[in-house]
Image (cartoon, rainbow, N blue to C red):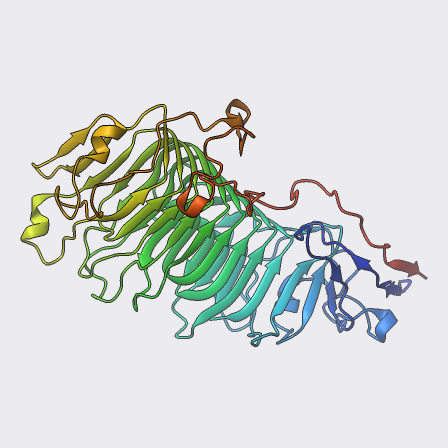
Length: 482
């Protein structure tokens, strides 16, 4: 049989990653590794021939078992289906990196500039599993037909997960069995990480819409920034199902575009978690949310410890409910509530008698726009419910813990808030930027803007087009076949 030698020469140039953020260009790293399904072989060393190597690998899994701290692998265009267990395991966990990076030296799995490699597990495994891993980057892929997660940062290894960077991916067609937790990105027992500029959609459980399906779903997540993503066609956008057991800050959820979900932001816990294991100081800011039943669903009242410190500011919400049930010391400001049913606190009388039931409280709410009007309720289901039907009535409803759960300072809540049309550029077209005549400009706290779009924040959702190849590709590799 005639032998075929494939000479693989990478020509290096400064290029923009097709999935990269507009502000960042990336020079192809000298000494990087390469995976090419069509031209590679796992018996190669993964290096470019132009740098003295023997050529690219064929599988991402081989790269994942090989590279170490500070090393980068570029994945060439193609469809990669690699669900089988790694050596020494029986787990169908898809691509499963074997090593950690180091602080300042992540292991980087990147799409080759100008290309969009596809990891398709054909519903046989998660696409990528990070099991007790640190300092890993995954960027530029289409992840589809994955079981339970596109990227699953998994607990149970006995090792910490930290410094995980997941960016510029298109993650969709994610499903799992009945009763399983399913997400585009699962973040379990992980901290100091970032999820940014991804599109996540079509997340189901057993093929149907289900409360355990989310764009991002987490157990024990802390200090995680979730920014500039678009999430739709899932039950929840971000589902922080259980807090960090040590009560560290949950994270910052900002500049996301969430739509066509049942719930945008969903918080949960229960009495099995330790007293210090609370949702703490999470920030929800500068998000655009529309076509949802609930902007925020707070199910944290069943808890040994008191969940606290939630900050909700500079969001634009078009429709849905906003209820606080277990968080104390909640701050709400600079939001535009458009066609939303107002603000409510929810508790039952058992919060006064049970050691594992917690009441909510609002510490500050002001500088918000409510349009076309305001309605609110304090103490829903308590037997002492107080309802208001207008902003003026709300402003004089009380302060300082009277009515119960309203802990704002005198003279009362939302003294600088308005019932007025915020004047979006085109709400019907889902353009929620502010018209030049908008009353939201300059009327916020400390003279800032109300709503998601401010003088500093111009882009909500992914900062590049993940769906199209709009960025110039580098010169193609030279290929000689003898």
